[in-house]
Image: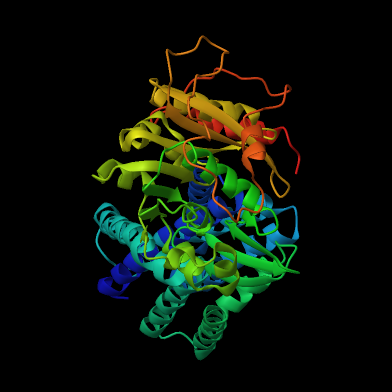
Length: 513
């Protein structure tokens, strides 16, 4: 077999191999939450499997070309179905981690066989010495890895999604196998087997949305009415007997039955503490529910909503169930939607605001932890107008009490000249939930354990009409935290030391569900 054929095969299988590794890490991070652990384990297991494959390769060298073809067909089936298999295991069994480990090892082993067999094919044809030959094949392997590392985040994942990407790469494996068969002139039965494998994978690619929907439905109690895998997360809407729910990466974001308790607390605690708030920024909140509450104030002239994922904001504009809940807030002419990273946006924007509301997912990963950092809250405070306020969701006061108080401490450290008011409200879908409200301080900083002096708390602008849950008395009651969760002075979380993620994970490990 000529060298260009083998070199082309080496380049293509390198692309496929690294994409499989990225697919496994991404899928695991979607399901298990901690992307550092997911990618570390996926990388380690895949590389270990590659080592096993390299050790196995000498046993297959007698028929190196045909062994390579067989390996590609097996790898295509393993890799192509890997995401669906992992999602099925997560939805239907308690063995998702076991399936993840097995898939990573099996795919890694198949990848590890490839390069040694290609080198063996070249040596069978009397090519040059082993060092020169191996260096050229490995160089192509590394070049292919670079191509894969760029293709996956910028092209494959955004436009195909995780499941289709797996099937697409699997088709590439079959194409390489078929190309090698054609060049080697092997019997038609192997070509027929490659053709059958190709048909199966193409069918899987075509039916991937249906398959993913069927598997994902098992993760939710209520019927799934909308589902999309965006470049950032899995977005799912369910509905049953008037209860509309939004999930991001399988985590509940709201239930229409009780979401008003959460969104009214976060919005109105800040809005009523500022005189005539005209300009408001919402960081997160792509579902439009906070915007709905902010727009109840006649003084509001502009609302800038910054959410990373356009799939969420588009759904909030277009899905009938969501627009019924958010009252078409994102279509209001006062609202400007910006799809951007909130950290980068607040760092770069020249705008200032009367109120900033921060409604982001819990700090369960290092990617989100930066949005709970002292640096982030400091930038938010720097974009407030005189007399302005900002409020952030601060995780559960009951299930994650240490994380809650660490968020409060971080907000306080970010703007030590401002007062911080911890808040809590019961949201049945979530439990007791906490918020941190930052306001101008009325006097000197209090001593440890003493409350801040906050003139005008909930009193500078009256509550608007039309609220489902709060009145003045219930809003005031949110400042009274239960005695079994006393204040804690914890170290602030920073970009270089994102301790809030670890604190959150430690809190969650106390609950077995």
